[in-house]
Amino acid sequence: MTIERTVAKAFALDDAAWRRHANPWSVALRNTVLPVLVLAFTSRLWLGWWAVVPVALALLWTWLNPRIFREPASFDHWASKAVFGERIWLNRDAVPVPARHRTVPNILSVISGVGMLFVLWGLLVFDLWPILFGIVLVYCGKLWFLDRMVWLWEEMKDATEEYRSWLTR
Image (cartoon, rainbow, N blue to C red; front, side, top):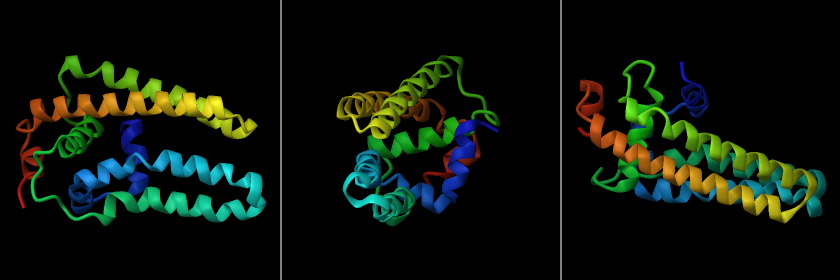
């Protein structure tokens, strides 16, 4: 099982939730998760232990986001294709992806991971510059990763019956 699939299991997304998450609004607003979490954790400066409340709300938003939107009328959007590509990427241990798609997503995940280390360090020491630098790295890595997932989806959407079924209502 891939590390990503293990993390994805924590979100417990079934087929219906994945289809709702393929809504472009869900993908776009998913980009609010990191800033909301940063603000929530930073609120400990002025809220003290009461910062647990905004942190809990931010974590709730992280969990709710893929679930609260309706399934889109069409899956022809870049964002929808990115979500389906992520599902393929999560399943790469069961259905191998082409060799040309195996390296870059891992590099981009490392870039995002390094960015998160800067964010965490900045939050720990209350320093804005590592937080901002880290956020830039996270988003550069993640958005480029999503673009690669669109490419992966386009190449593999007909690879299995399961993948083809994602488009049927």
